[in-house]
Amino acid sequence: MNINKVINKNAHAYIISSPDADVREKMALELACAFICEKDGQIPCLECVCCKNVLAGFHPDVTEISRKTDDKGKTKREIQVDQIRQMAADAYVRPQQAEKKIYIIKDAGYMNISAQNAALKILEEPPSYVIFILCTDSAEVLLDTIRSRCVTIRAEGETEGGESKSALEYISLAAKKDLAGLCMFFGKNESIDTEQMSAFIGEVRFCLNNVICLKKNYEGLTRSDAVRLLSLFERADGYMRLNVGVKHILGMLCVLTI
Ligand SMILES: [Zn+2]
Image (tube, rainbow, N blue to C red; front, side):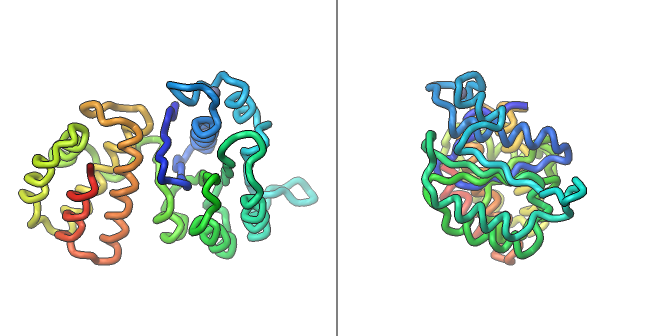
């Protein structure tokens, strides 16, 4: 699995979820490479010195945080709050070599509540050059407030839903940047109920994750557009959970898709 160029200029935090720890950690490193790679064009190249250092765990601007081990060499049950506070303090020191400074939190789901709250604080107002990558089994174990600040990438493309007809129609219009078509699409669907809306959001996210993970191509929708739209649909999902009306959410999607 390969993440090239999943760089959304507006996103400073990502969640990579996969039940397979190796898969998500590999993806996290490749995503980190994408921000650090010194080549032009197709990035990350995974071959330049910067990429190689990231992959080998030597890059000074990429830090991995994981559960500590105790005196007996046993892995502790939780990522503790002082580890996150230390990360937050370190985040204010500018990067040494690269333009970005990246923190990969392995097993982010093991952050206890105080660690998650400390993480939330820095996620809310991070220094502009910092990128956070949270690896987890399942994004659902993280606080909603953390999730709402991150772009979630599901490694397996194993999201809720599948490719429904309306999701494919939407993706196709978004890929073509067909504003008139999108207005018609949302007009046609304005009377759907909350259950149908949730299903639609899940299906679109499924397709977007496929694009981000390079599993599939939908009418030329680019990866950076997919990342941006995924963030938009996560916002829509958050509004659903806050019981915002379906029509309002459809309106937002219509206005912000392109
Ligand atoms: Zn490179």
